[in-house]
Length: 364
Image (cartoon, rainbow, N blue to C red; front, side):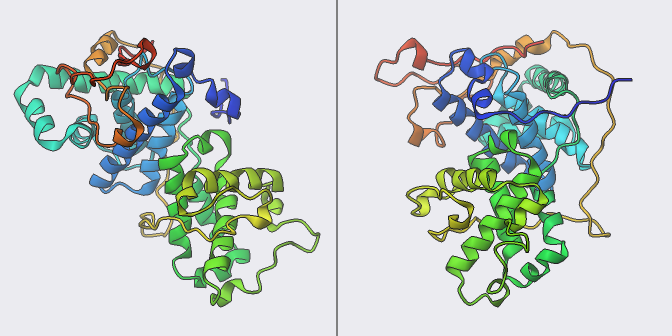
């Protein structure tokens, strides 16, 4: 029996040359579409009181999918719902696909219109739920049935339990800020989880937050005497598999895409200079744990490969925001309900490249 292959890490060039871009979708529009889908996915998970682990798995699955498939042929709404549905099962927090689809619809389109459509059109609702199940099948094939999604959240918590980092437990809210940075990555730069391993990200996050605390909390005694390097002269994180070059690249991305609004004009060139401008990550709730204090185990069973149905053509009912909406309006621009006519175009004319991206069926 062939071994289950892990989903590979990708290069910047491979991520940039996504199937959507190759299909003619502008990169800015691709990024905005993903940002909106991830935002609504995370809010839906929060509404169900899912752990941050289940939520993060859903986001990772969603982004992995679109490294293999195009936005032009695969609705971001359907794939977001399918990703969160699969993640809830992987992390042993199962929710039905009907519950997740209905809640995501309400978050995405607004509760009153979504609720009215779900209740007034049973046939359409049934097609929507069936499309999400079809989306899950294609998602499974696209990610190679790799259910063992490694998360920076879990890796970071494991690192903080090491004796070397025991002193960090005395730093106020340090663990909260570390987990907050993990979630900031999912919201603002999810491509990091495609390019770097969870272990590398976790090491860089802890290093980054230690530097932040040193520059913004001078009275934290627990950080005063922490050695920058080990006895062999190497940075402490190098002993755990993160090279200084990759640490510099990751922390530079933090400064550029996560915290640049706080005054960081440019990312540091070397790891030792990271976080010199004194930024902080957003604070989020700690991950939920079971009675033994360990995170919930992930399901690693591999189902039989399903046959893809023909209901993918129904996904063309899901419309997205008009692509000519400017960046600052993207958050407020809500797409019409599936099956409803799209909103009128803006007054200015748009080129065909900037026009409405029609999302159709899921590719088989």
